[in-house]
Structure formats: structure tokens, C-alpha cells
Amino acid sequence: MNVALFTWLHEGAGNRPILDFLSVMAAELTPYLVIVCMALYWFTTDRAGKRVLLEGAAVVLLGLLVNQLITLFFFHPRPFMMGLCKPLIPHAPETSFPSDHATLLFGAALALLFRPGWRGKGAFLLLVAMIGAWGRVYTGLHFPFDILGSLGVALSAVLIVASIRWALTPLYDTVIRTVDHVTALVTRKERLTS
Image 1 (tube, one colour):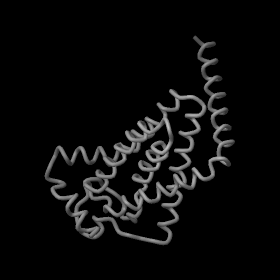
Image 2: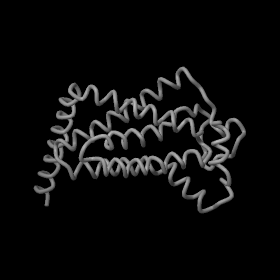
Image 3: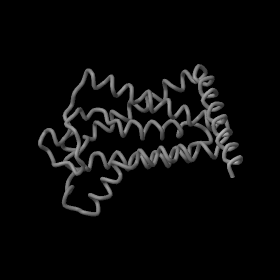
Image 4: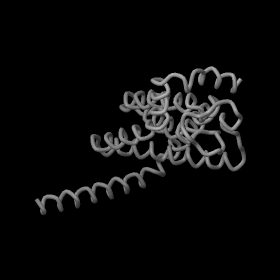
């Protein structure tokens, strides 16, 4: 079923210049778009919002750590390693399950989506995540089940981090104070030199 879904989603890849270009952009650039969005959100929110964003970062880090643990015990070849396609993006022949890109994308999106006041931003990031996930499959780097596995890892990470929010909040506050302090120092130095 995984191979059949991949074949259906990957059909035409390499022969559709516009769609090929868009899929490569989706596969490669969506993580950067999410990082830029999170940074913009940081500078336009209050302390409570910054805690939400730091929780999103914690979800992503935990998800990526879980991915690394999974790859220690489970190896699944990428589609191009099985001779199913020629990838549109050069990639090392390494395990495909789960996708680190998709885990990052879904982790950030779900971390915001489940928080009151952040659902709109979370929904936007979820749309970006789905576009990025499609790009990873269409370009021949991942199977659909790799993406579903990443969604499962991201959702699990959201639940785990939310369950220990009380323990992580002091760490979030320390990070916020440190960033605010550094920002104040940089701003003061700029005023003195101008």
C-alpha cells in the first residue's frame, strides 16, 4: 500500500517542470519558512506567547530526538534506493522513516494549533507542513508512511511536552529573560554608536 500510494503521488515527477520546481521548493524551503514564522511570532508576542513558541521548539527537538532513536532500531530504504524513482533532489542513501523535515513541520504546527489564541497561526503552519510533506513524497525522498510516522512522532511529542509544561516553564522563562537581556544590550549599544 505504501508503494502504491507513493507511485500515485509521485506520478509524473521529472516530466512536469512547473510542478517539479514547486515540489522541490516545498520539500526544501518549508522548514525555513516555519523557522522564519516562529521568529516573527516571537517578536510580536508577549511573555505568555513566547512560552508557547518555546514549547513548540521543545516539541520539535523532542520529535527529532525520537526520530534518531527510531533510526537506531529500524531502517527503511528511501524510494530511490528501491529503484522506484529518480529523486528530484540529490540525497544520501539513508533511512527514510520517519522524515525529519516532516517531524519539524508538524511538530511546530501542532504545538501552536492546540493552544488557545494560537490556532490560526497553527493552522497556517499546518498548511505549510502538508505542502512540505507532499514535496518530500513527490520529489522521491519519502514514502507516504514516512510522513504519517512523522505526524505520529510530532503528535506524541506535543502530548509529552504538554504533560510536563509545569516543569519546563521555568526553563522557558530563563530563556525569555536571557533573550530580552541580550536584545536590550544590543539595542543600547546601537543607540550609543548612532
